[in-house]
Each structure stands twice: as structure tokens, then as C-alpha cells.
Length: 162
Image (cartoon, rainbow, N blue to C red; front, side, top):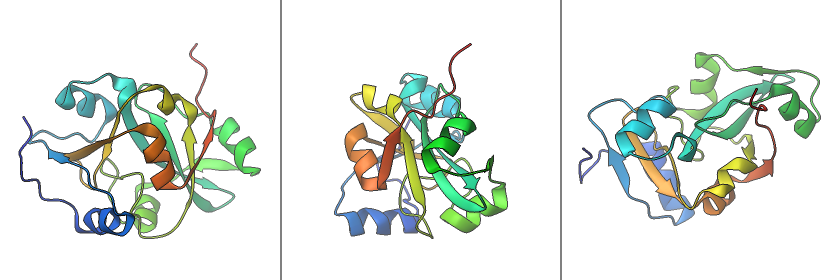
């Protein structure tokens, strides 16, 4: 069950104000740190969850927005970015770049400005759910708006299902 008065992460609340965006932030007593946990708590399809993942492209942090049921294909990300090497960032770089811990990283409102790539698969949903700054908070938004507010470049960066 969600509460009606969530404690919104201050950095995320500031980002919402700066963007002029009003969303309902839902708080859950159980963690929504993973896409599976978030989908179960919300009661939505796994693919309607937005994973905000930090990678390093030639040593520069990049945010990739991916649906909860898919994995990022780093070769496709490398091609989109024109980078030589793309690797998953460690927890310290995620926190340093975004200001949030893994499992609570929202798609915008980060400590530093980073390049953002959003997998086009997110656009097939009427509404998607993303972390709101903590492992217990989420918010819903229409995917085209989410991509726009995140300043993301839409691209096909999802691993092919085997």
C-alpha cells in the first residue's frame, strides 16, 4: 500500500519545482529498489518500470533509461554515443553523478548534468513508473513527457531477447 503523504527526496522535489512538474510520488513500506519489486508494489507490468542506469562511456557518465523487463545492450549504447568503451558504473560513481543511491535514481534531478539515452521501448506504454529519489518512492508519467523532462535522446539500446 502506498501512503498519501510521501517524504519526497529534497533533490527530486527541487527538480520537480524547477521543471514546473507536478506528479504524485507514491511511497511503499517495502523496497522498490529493483524493477521486479517496483512492478509488484505498483501492480503494473514489469516493462512499465523505468530503470535509470548509469554507464561510463569513454570515462564519462551517461544515463540510460530502460524498461524494467529488458537489459541494456552496451554495444548499441556505444554506437549511439560514438564511444569506444561503455561499461556499467559502480555504486560510488552512480551516487557521485546523480546524488542518489542505486535503486532510487530518478530519470532527472541529478547532481550533475549527464547525457541521457532512453530506449524507445518505453514509448509503447501509456504510463511508465520511475524511481523518485529513494528505494521506496516512485512516480508515474507519460513516457514522451518523461523522455522530454530527462532531456533524453530516444534510441534502440535494448538487448535482443534470446
